[in-house]
Structure formats: structure tokens, C-alpha cells
Amino acid sequence: MATSPPTTALPTTLQLPSDIGIGNVTIGGYIACVMAKYTLHYARHHPKMQHQVDLRSAVVQFYRPVFPTKSMTMTLREVSIGKGWSTLRVESFQGDKLTTSGDLVVTNFSNEGVTLQTGWRPSPEPKPIDLTKLETDSHPDWISYHCAFYPDGFQRGHSYAKAFIPRTPRREATFVEQWIEPGWDCHPQGSLTNEMIQFIVEMPLPVQEDLFPPIEGKPSTGSIAATLEFAEALEEDGSKALKARVVNVSLTLSTEIKQRLPSEGVRWLYLRNECKRILNGRMDMEVLLFDEKMDLIAISHQTAFLIPPASKIQKL
Image 1: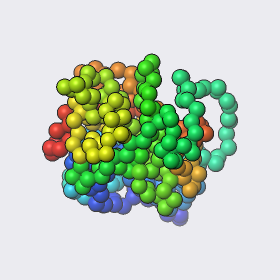
Image 2: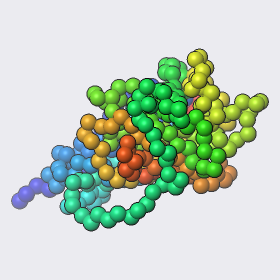
Image 3: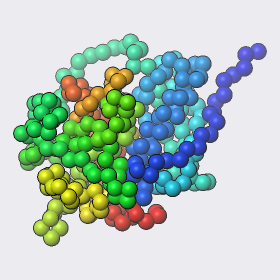
Image 4: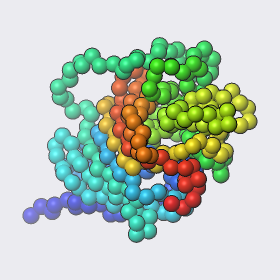
């Protein structure tokens, strides 16, 4: 009689890096990426899922903050194994406390199926851009902002992405837009890859900061106005200490990946982050991710709660 494959994976324990964080807390998008890597590793060694090499979607829920000062243990169990796609559930713990859980769907983007052109385009459409001028930071319409890295800085994790924002923001827009490239060598070729997508979609500038009035005549740290000032400053770039009114605490991160980026990755990605409503501290976000040709790569929906920045320093 044939032996059935195991329906769970052996737990794996890892020590999280301290530099991919906000305050004392590890960035949630990074945790989601680690869970996806664990899932795809399991699928690659499973006799019925070896061909399912792509993450199709992930719904990740965060129950409590994850601290890099403690090791994190992940467990995995099979929810559904299919020919076209499979669903696996991953849970992460610190000590005996459940911190994060995720339902992840793996598939193979090379599988053939119905393809139709819908004609959808983001509205308003992104302005035409010359990426060669971004390379030299000489574009007349876009300016770069790259967080300095300090071991004790509040926004250490944001150093991994270099952002370009409009020099003149759209007045009519209800969203924040930016082009990004790797801030450091995130990949052997210094490129952005599929395994980073959940980290990337949680990294846009905080849209809520543009809705606050100035503080003593100064815009909040995360606002477009403040970022424009930081982009032109030589010393104070806002990364050492956060002066924003609030920060996001992710409750859920749902990401649907539409297509596979080249295996060697890409240098540029375009993000558009829109919030529909903020009520009693509850906030929603939709992040659209496009490649250099403005092909849609991923759609992410997030629910978050807004808290004072000091709470990211304290042990929640």
C-alpha cells in the first residue's frame, strides 16, 4: 500500500533580522513574505505540488506584533491539494503566542486558461515617465527619497526601497503614487522579485498623513509635503524619529498576484495606494502594483488600525 504524503510540515524556527522593522516591531509584509517562502519550499518537495511554483494569493492576519528580539516558529498544514492550485495554512508563533496566520494559494502561472482583454486602466492614468532619468535622479517631474539607515532608527525597514514621488502632487487625486527601486542589494542583481511583493505593497507612503493639518506649521512626517522636504534635505530625512500623528497597525494583508515577474527581477515598480475611508481609527487601503510597462502585477487590500507612533516603540 502506498504511503500517503504528510499533511503538515515540520515546524521551522528562525531569528528575524532587527533591521527590517518599524520601531521595535518587524514589518508585517516581511513576515508575509517569509510565510510564502516557507509555503513554496513545502510545495516544491511535495509529490502533488512540485509544479506549483508560484504564489497566487495570500490572506494574512496579524494578531499581535512580531518582535525581532525573539525567535519565530512557523507551522504549516494542508487545506486543499488540487491539480491547478493548492491552499496551505501557515501559522507563526513567538513563544506560545500565535502572532500571524495566513491562507496561501500556490499555482503555476504557466498553466493555460482563458485570457481576455478587459480594457481596464487606472484612473487617472499614471503620467508618462522616462525611467532613464530616474536612474540619474534628473527627472523634472519626480524626486527621489531614500530613508537613511540607523540601527536605532524608527523606519529602518524603509531603507530597503528607494522611492520617487511627484514633485508636484496631483491636487485632485485621492491616492499616493510612487515609483520604487531597491534601496539596497535586495537580490543578487539588485532587483525586485515576486518573493518581495507582499513586502513591497505594505511599504507605500502613508496616505493618511496627507489628510492631517500641519503640526506647528510643519507637515506630518509621512505626508507627501514632508517627504518632498526630506528629499531635498541633506541631514534631517525623517528616518531617525517619526513625527507623524499616527502609524498603521496591519490587521489583514490580502494580496493577489496577477503574473510572474522575470526570474532575474525588475528594477522599477509603480505603486498606487488609495484609502476609501478612515473612521474611528479603522482604515482600509488598496495598493495597485505595476511593472515598468504599466502591466498590473498585483492587487493588495489591507485593513489597519491607526495608533500613536510611541506604541511601536513600547512592547504592545
